[in-house]
Amino acid sequence: MFENLSQRLSGVFDKLTKQGALSEDDVKTALREVRVALLEADVSLPVAREFVKAVQEKATGQAVTKSITPGQQVVKIVHDALVDTLTGEGEPGDLKIDNPPAPILMVGLQGGGKTTTTGKLAKRLTEKNGKRVLMASLDIYRPAAQQQLAVLGAQIGVDTLPIVAGESAVQIAKRAKQQATLGGYDVYMLDTAGRLQIDETLMQEVKDVRDAVNPRETLLVVDGLTGQVAVEVAEEFDGKIGISGVVLTRMDGDGRGGAALSMKAVTGKPIKYVGLGEKLDALEEFHPERVAGRILG
Ligand code: GDP
Image (cartoon, rainbow, N blue to C red; front, side, top):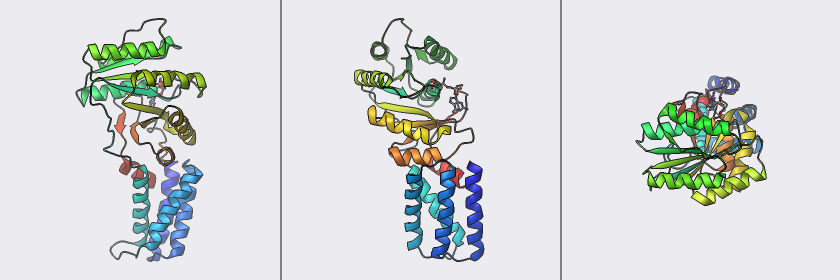
């Protein structure tokens, strides 16, 4: 997908460069191609439209700069508009985790990479930020998931809340809060249960947990390869629970930029991190410039 997008763009821009002047028709032709390319990269139609409109407005008002070719100029306008759309508030990867113990709620569908990302982020907060982190699995439906988090914790040297059979998700969350307070932890991370699809029971349970701990950050973990589905999942979670940010996983795959662009444009929520592999250090802060650069190729 990335290749398609960048190839298409460079084809158009090559043409413009050769003509040596940036007419209104040139801009229109280029932007038609940009729109098609965005759609092919799984950017949603309204977002692609909006994006192209913004770029067209910027481009049309601009005189052709002598020092760069018209092609370069359009590339720059498109690039800047991509960065604009992708940029959230604050620094990349910023988390509000002052006032210990700060609860971070991890939400998302099953298989999106939630538990892995919880481990990755805990590792990062421990090693890079020097935080004491406690992790707790609230997945009472799948004992294997609770076990998975305990194994992850042991691997990365991060404490996990001991598993007590028969507790509800809210009870576990409250116990995590208590343990984090008594144990002097800076952060406690709650890895909520995922379902294959969004359902009311899941949402109600996450709401109850949210109300019990009042999370400082509620991070939605979604598979970046699912494109528009990821955006729909985000809208759903944001509408019902309220999320503070998004982690896009599997951006190491064919890494479509489309999901990132639609995600930010539609939900208005910042993408805080991207998952770049299965390894526990394969997590990066989200950098709009890098993603814009990758989209343009
Ligand atoms: P959960 O059900 O949402 O908790 O999902 P898991 O954390 O168990 O992850 C599901 C699978 O996706 C596992 O095999 C992970 O190793 C894999 N995974 C998670 N994040 C990434 C990522 O950023 N890139 C790749 N390639 N795989 C990932």
